[in-house]
Image 1 (cartoon, one colour):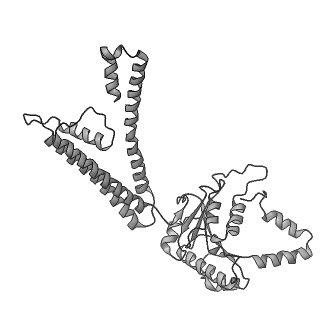
Image 2: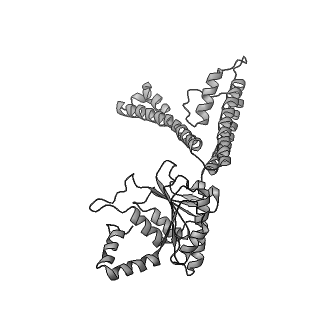
Length: 357
């Protein structure tokens, strides 16, 4: 439509009724429209970036990685098949009165790519009815096949059981598991102490602080999700839905490359012995999977500390057990003999900032 208006204005009859300013504006508009159409090729860059991410990412499941590579290959072969078959059909169907093809094969290939990619420069166009019908059929076929296979690729490569950006194996990160992952107060206090800013500095997280990966088999609670979406914790905390008793889930959480594993219990539980039993089972599974990673386990009952020594193999590295009740009793006992001991310990344990996350 813009080209027709420009042709009319450049004609002797149209030029007398419109000014040169309108003609220059339409020429400028036509140039911008062509530039914007050409920018549609940037979709290819997004596809290539996604393919590179799918093939270059270190997936923990070799079978899933193989399926992703097969699906990427299938998409590429499907696109190439559509383009080459369409270009050949156009060259066969688009003929003049003498039966000679109107387009060379490279012109047919160019017309196919421009048409399917919805760029549509308009410099080449089919004339015969057969070629137009073939192009319409190929366009509808590509609109069905390519998005369907791309959606399948996205479903294969994505991890529906994770939330947030997972750190790579080379990044510093901690893994937190146990029922304490679902306790908002426990996780909030842990992250507050870990990411507490220094006295007098701004609350900006530096790249030297480790990432945190939460691992639990229950769906992500809403309050934990809101906590993870905090501006100070965004892209620093991720959640992996899985069990510490399953080796594949430990691979997804990158436990073997973590700096430490924390097994936290739920202080809100009414059965401390049962909660400690779950924590001990989790600790045993993680230690059996990876013996070299430091571990800290939170036990709610003081009697469970002795069970920990009998549960683990003595040849394995030490697992640090923390019992809040025992620590409180020791602090109270020391406070009886040392003045201001409770205040001293409190100042050491609490972060410098009193601001909550």
